Length: 120
Image (cartoon, rainbow, N blue to C red; front, top):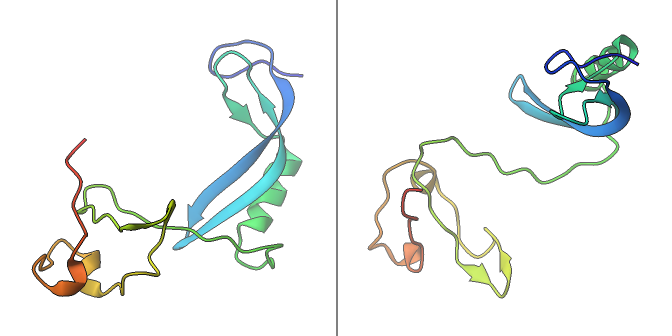
């Protein structure tokens, strides 16, 4: 066991999900053994685990599964997609490059029902 580098409390064995963006790709590794501080929740990895994480996130290892990921950039215009029942989906609206940027024409019929959210 070791002490936390942040608050000095004794760290305990745990598991975490490791997520990193590297070279334009997002890597998610589930059930990673780690040391976690029960007080400040700081996570540390032993060297063997860090080496294996590096291999997983190298882009040279086949993934066990693929997941859907939505990418956002903070500060861009927020365009809300109408809900179908209780599920939010992009399948009901053809996305175009004009929707992805900050300029769009709300009067165009395909944008009916799309609203921009108020700033938080």
